[in-house]
Image 1: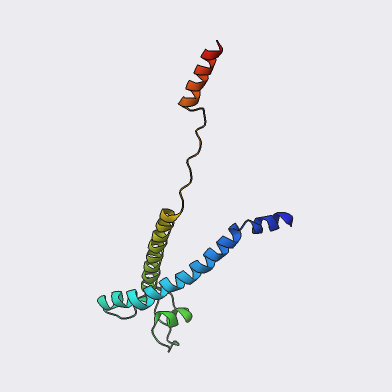
Image 2: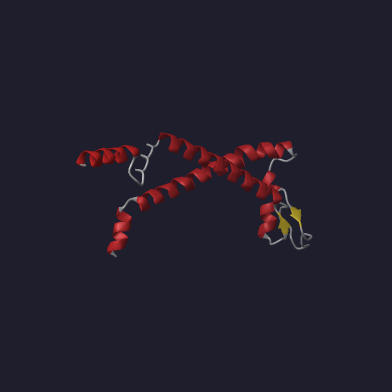
Length: 139
């Protein structure tokens, strides 16, 4: 148990938890941007307002189904179909989120202090020269 306490006390786990919470909230913002702003424009260009409602039925809708002919309703009713509009919406959300995360990481790397270069593995030229001088003086 003491090892677990030491792990928690390091702070890495807390940083990770904060990052996950902020990331989840940020994902909701990007999903809203995609679903409520970008995809309606894309849908209007392609002839419809709700791009996520584009689908292809793999089998006919059962005669017993009398609900709306929307992707969500048909999916809930168990009608087999390919929801390519929903897939495109999610893919656009992913690309936007990935780009924004890339830009954030790039900016963070720019403002973070740079690590000092590691010391060379062997003695430097100056050290070797000083050793030669020392050895010559001893002789």
